[in-house]
Each structure stands twice: as C-alpha cells, then as structure tokens.
Image 1 (cartoon, one colour):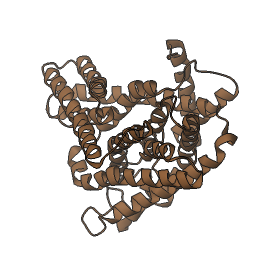
Image 2: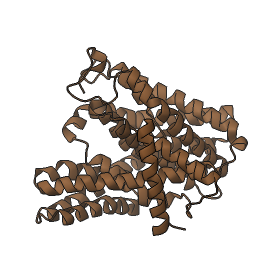
Image 3: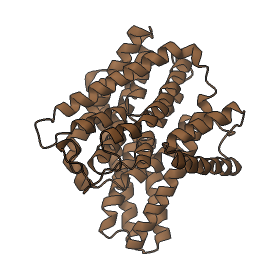
Image 4: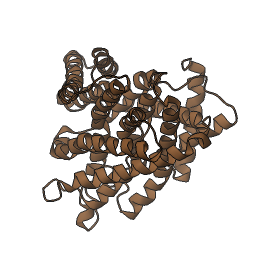
Length: 407
C-alpha cells in the first residue's frame, strides 16, 4: 500500500514537531525521527505502508541525491576527486570484502549470503550522512569529502551487489565481466544524467519563469533516475550528474537568478520531506523486529563494519599523506565515525528475491545496523565535532592548528 495524502499529512506533522523538539534538545534531527517512529510503532500507530525497495529508490533517493548534488561545487570537488574516488571505489570494495569474510567465519553464513550482505551494507548512505551533517552545520572541505564520497560510492556498491546477486543465483562471474559491468554502470549512469539534464537546461534557458525552472529541475531529477534504471545503469549516479550540471552549469545563465534561489529553496524543502518520511518509516520498521533472533549476527556485523570503515578511511587517506591532498587526521576521524548506513542498504536488502539464502536474517541485520548507525553514531557525532573543534566549520573560522585548517 502506498502513502496516501492523509498519511503523508500526519507523518509530516509529526516530523515538524520532532524537528522542533530535536532542535531544542540539540539532538540530530534524523535520530529524533527514528526514535519517534519506533515510539509510534510501539503504540501500534501505523503508517499504512511498508518500506520497499521501489518506495525508497523511486520516491526518496532521487530528490535527496539531487538536492545534495546541486550544492556541490565542481571546482572544489575536482581538487579532491582523487581522494573521493579512492574512498568510493577501493574503499567500498575493501569494506564489503571485510564484512563478507567476517560474516562467513564468525557467524557461519554461507558465502552467498555473506557476499550479498557485505555488498549491500558497504556504501555509506547519502540519505543519512547528508541529513546528519546539515543538521550539525558541517561545511567546507570536510562536508564536501563526506557528501561526495557518500554520493559516489553508490556506483561501486551497486556493481558489487549485482555481482553478488549473480553469484547467489548460480551464475559464473569472471574478471573481465566484472570490469565491464563496473564501467557500464558508472559511465552509463553519468551519460544518462548528463543527457537528461543538458536537454532540460537548454529548454530552461528559454524562460525566466522560476516555476517552470523548478519544474524542469524536477523532471531532471526523476527523469535521469528513471531513464538510467530502465537501461540498467546506476540511477543514483545519473541523478548526481544531473544535479551537479544543474548546480554548476545552471548558474552560468541557463537558470535565472530568481530561479536559482527558488530552485534551491524548493529542493531544500523536498529533501526535508523525503528525510522526514523515510526516517519515520525506518523507526516504525525497527520497532517491529525481533532483535533477539539475530542479535549475534547483528553485533558481529556492527563490529565488522566499524572495523572495515576504520581500515578504509585511514588506509585510503594515508595514500595521500605526502601530497597536497593530505586529509587532516581529525577529518579522518569524522569520515570514519560519520560513515553511516541507511536507506540505500535497506533498499538493497528489501530488494533481495524471496528465495535468497538467509533473506529475512539479512534484512533484519541490515535494519539493526542502520539503527545503530543513525542513533549511536548520530548521537555522538556532535560531541566528536566539538572535541575536534569542527562543528559549524567554514572558511574564515578555522582553529589555530594545521589539523583544523581552513576548509
């Protein structure tokens, strides 16, 4: 059952109240939403809908990724692109491998289940990460690194997951086939996003009506995603490409000055709505799980994921320690602890076929990992930023040391 207008109205009212309370209590907004959703479920207040892969992918991810992408400046991203790509490719594969091997040898999952879980949980989730860092006021280079990595690593995670699905179905996966699928998924998604956004920017350049310009960006966000998914490439990378084109090329005259302000405000609100609904629904689903049945694999998964994330961040950033792209150690700490998991992992888990081995166990463990990620890491992120003197960091107010250099 889908989300009806009455349910949306009710959930948004709850989300608005939670946002006000969270701000007063200085809690991350996403944490408040998950907890509120769990409380509602405990009192048997239902949303009338179920979280599914289609609901997350087609309804929530496109606006969230697009809103984040339009605010990423290409000039700054280009400088840190080697770091971001290393984290989003080598880092994701390494994290997936550590988690898969750990689940195989610590809890005894067969390799197919372990590989599926390792692949779907490897990528940091743009929904969780972006919402949390916006709430805490992180800006500048640190926020750029976190956002760009979380947006770009979806391509690697999607390829790894599709390969694991082929293996689980009994298919034969070879090295050349893996490389080809990786290239097609990445470049295909970027091409779809570029074509859709480029066409719509050309049309938008013929009008200065801000309402029409908003409409064109909406078509660009959802259209690029749907086209990419239809042809079998990365929809999220298509939306990311479209968003970056709108945010960077659109500012060169394709979108009017008034239109740019209207577009930014519109997508900020759409992202707020999407975040509100998805985290409330996650909280409601969490309260319905039987945690005791999967507690051992869930604890093992959390420990493995944290270990893998730490290894990935410090190892990948270490590759650049003697270059101009050196990442300060306090940034690395935030990248490690800010590697939240969320809607993307749940969408992939919920999309597993009914006959997949250990499907229900994988889904339950994925939800528990997301709950820990959003609540435990979310609640401790502000103290960590305070300790590292990074909360609300921006150019012009850096601390005295090199570790907190201007962003």
